[in-house]
Length: 435
Image 1 (cartoon, helix red, strand yellow):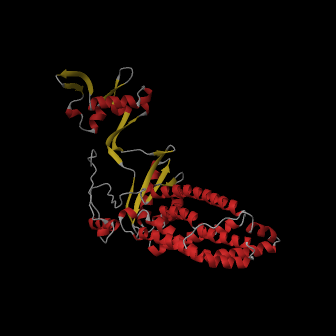
Image 2 (tube, one colour):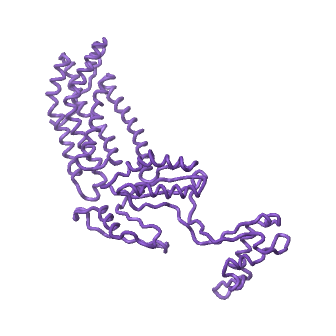
Image 3 (cartoon, helix red, strand yellow):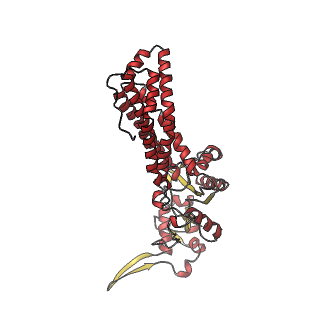
């Protein structure tokens, strides 16, 4: 492909997803099974997604000893292959081209020879050294001086050549150096000064879960490798690394959002406890989001987490409507229990319709099957089902929580203070809601 003559790519163009009843992952799996083992290629990779954050499984191993590192890589590849649903297991180490490896003997150093001197003289004898450069019209002719062809065909020819020392004397090659045939490295990857090799694999989502496999490897197998090969370290790359980084950033943002929501509610409510009751709907909304993924047959993805964070700012609206009306009734002189019952009656329709209209507004996106919508469906499921589940809990849980909170404060002698908080001057005006 392109300038890489050693690479080949075969593409299969599919019908739009809404016009076929089989997914691209299933097609890739069947092609892989049909082809089976192919002799010759160093590696074969199947891709069925246009966008990817990396390999499903990618673990980077690092060690000071390269031989131990390669042994650990082989064992890790074999272990990954034991998990059902894994395929395309490969590592990032690639052997380079065949080359001659020169090593100096101890005598060479006493004569003042260095490996650079040795390599330069061998190159001049076998590859050639430019002795003359002639311009012939538009052509640039270079005259190279080197050994005759019959004297540069084998290792014996190298061992028989003579090496010139810095003082001008010549010594046989075999007396100052050794030569062997081996393979070089196509690339050398390092991290913190140590050689690293990555082991990667794809996972069939219908058979196994990549996150569970990564966790099991990290908890069970990789510590065994570290015991068997002292100095070995590992780190997660690919999708797992992206997932961890995203979750860390999302967690920090979620905590900041919770603090801001609490502050915005505490100021108009003039209470430290009522904002907590309002925010009680957030964890129930999260439970609803998880059950929504179960109902729709979806896995929790990064966009699902984005939807849950967004849900935290939306799901408090119903609690806000209920408690604002409750505070208004307290201002009118109604007792606590009566105010909660009346607020539930009066605001039931508004809360229910607000949640239902939000859910049905998201329903077309949840049921959409086009490729363009697949990325947003997990977020819509988190929002829609989270709001539905939290609404049922809010209508029952918020009044019960307020009653329990009032009884606790009264028991500990804080009734008057709580009443001042609940019926404080400047209580919020109920926001406009459907119904």
